[in-house]
Image (cartoon, rainbow, N blue to C red; front, side):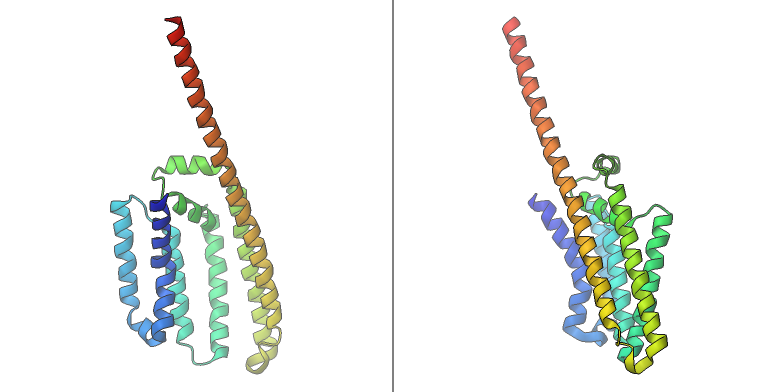
Length: 228
């Protein structure tokens, strides 16, 4: 269990925390000059997990690339309004990416769940059977739809702000974006909690089944001994 947690923590540090820390500590100029080394570290770590642990964290790689691209483009904008516009483009691209992945049955939340299970299991057949057994496909699809809906609503709010209020008052309806984000986070946390509950319930049922099998095996052996 400790090894699994350490794998997940290391993945988090490499794929998510490292680009954010580099940007926060060194600023955008330092970040820009070290993007190559950041991506090189991503490749080296991915090769290490592939050959030493027989796994590749696909969702982690995608998230790190998205964070790096976001920091690179947003940090180089000359003013807040241009940053707001560039973020609007990125929101649209993110929504399109999620939709395209769904079209090819590559749900991002399903992939995150698979990557987490990969820290313990390396057999794809077992992992996919666990997902089907726990009936998580609907939850993953719903989460994907929720994030697309959030991005589209935020995109529409931003487009309206830019076209209607312009550079001086584009933040006039910023509260709507905050409300949209709050609702999205509440729904996200609720459904992630449901997925965790299903996982815990399935594990407890599996443990009970294993315990019953052990008890049945002991009873059979005792009966055989008595007969002899």
